[in-house]
Image (spheres, each protein chain N blue to C red):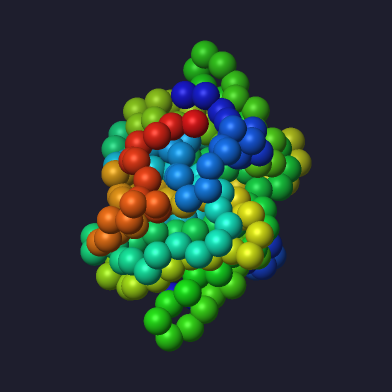
Length: 120
Length: 120
């Protein structure tokens, strides 16, 4: 049971689109992820997920609209809702979702599907 | 499914020690709370909880030590661990824990026990 700093943890992340687990509780994981560019369309059948932007700006694209999140803004994507994330410039994001949720949900992508449970 | 701003949500909170729900997902709640002063000792038998400081500084006191959290720092208090929170000056904190977790855990306190499920 130790404290940690978001800034320090993000500084240890040198890959895009590879979520890193910084805390596990109640069967959920708090993950940090850095990314830029466009992620594949996908959905999580059994997992709601919340995105909270720590630094930068990201977009959550849904099939019918886009949600733009600035630093300090958050949004829940409910289970079963198809979405993709994107950012013009590198963004730092907190994700909170059930442990062992695959980042690409119902698809497997050679480039984007990340290993689960990697801590930082 | 709408975005929200932490700053805007915190601006709507005018009470201390009264967590407000800003998102519910996977049976968990993301809550915001403002406080200053000292909270009663308690524990949550079935709930781990994470505290993430958004603005200010807080202390989590355990029976054998204190954890001081600055803005951008977080700490998980595992279930069953007795603790109390405190702050010299008003602090803004995100809490993530199972829905319907009583803020005072195993105790009921006339002043500090807050109603559950209040949204902001």
